Amino acid sequence: MKHIISLFVTLAAFWLLNSGHYSVLILSLGFASIVLILVIARKMDVVDHESQPLYLTRKIFGYHLWLIKEIIQANITVVKHIWLGKKSISPSLKKIKISQQTDMGKVIYANSITLTPGTVAIDLVEDEIIVHALLYKDIESLEAGEMDRRVTLLER
Image (cartoon, rainbow, N blue to C red):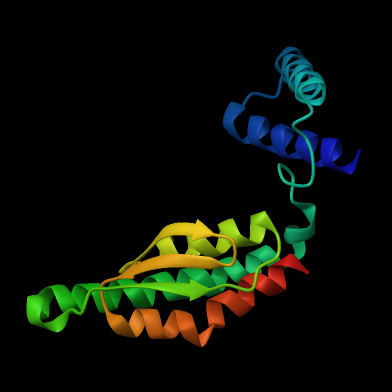
């Protein structure tokens, strides 16, 4: 039930932010459309802990702030190596062990790697991710495990 309530609040906030109209008719039509979506989603059995990961709510904002900082730093590094030319890069491909237990955690980790400029998560198999990096030092920083540790903390 808490997932349905969470979906209702999310849809209502999204609808209100995009609508900008607050007359009784428009609000009632919006409410009706949200209820219809909730009924359909419930019948399709798609509202669960994966579609509405409520356990991430408390910790995700801190992780997003840290990830934004990492993305900015990686952007600066990539631009620097573009200016320095081909000889300054060291493309690498490597399998990296991950410690996430849930599918959601594994996907968050793989997407975080891909969001960070200069690195791409190519494949995710069991407890390993194949990563391509523009610089070998990016592979080393992933092996150091800071991002892995932070995503694992999200799962708890």
